[in-house]
Length: 212
Image (cartoon, rainbow, N blue to C red; front, side, top):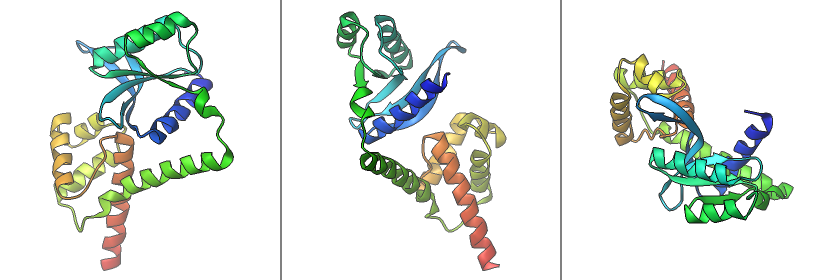
C-alpha cells in the first residue's frame, strides 16, 4: 500500500476512536473455503455495539468501491463502513444509501487545530495506556499462565501465540478468558494484548527482583 494510503488509515483510526469506535483488528483477511479472497482495512466496534468492516480510501469513492465495501462486509457478517473524502458522483452516493453503507467523510476532520489535535492524540494515548495497565492487577501467575503471556508477547498474532503453547486458537481464547476472570484483562485486539503481555512480564520480573 502506498504511503498516502497508510496515512489515510492512520487518520481514519484516530477519527474512529474519537467517534467512540474501538478498532479491534487491522488488515482483516477475508477467507472463503480456506482461501483468502481479499481483506478489509479494519474491523471496528461502534458505540452502538455493532461491528463494522472498515474500508479506508484516501480519495473519493465510486460505485465500484461502494459495492466492494458492501460485499466484503457481508462476507464477513459485519456492517459496511467507508472512511473517505466523499463520492465521485451522485450514483455512488445513492448506492451507498440504498445498501446502507455508512460513510464517514475525511474532509470534515482534516482541519484540526494544533490544540484540538493534541487533545485527540492525548485521549487516544490515555485510553491505550489505561488498557495496557489493566493487566497489572495480579500478584502472581501460574506456570501455564506465564506461558500464555510469554507466547503473546513474542508473537505477531493470536494464531501464532496459540501454536507456541501447543494450543488451537480456541484453546488459547479459553485460557485468555480464564485470565480475564482473574482480573487480567487482556485486550481482544492483538497489538494491545501484546503490549499488555510485555508490560506484565516486565512488571513481574521487577517485582520478583525486588523481593529477592
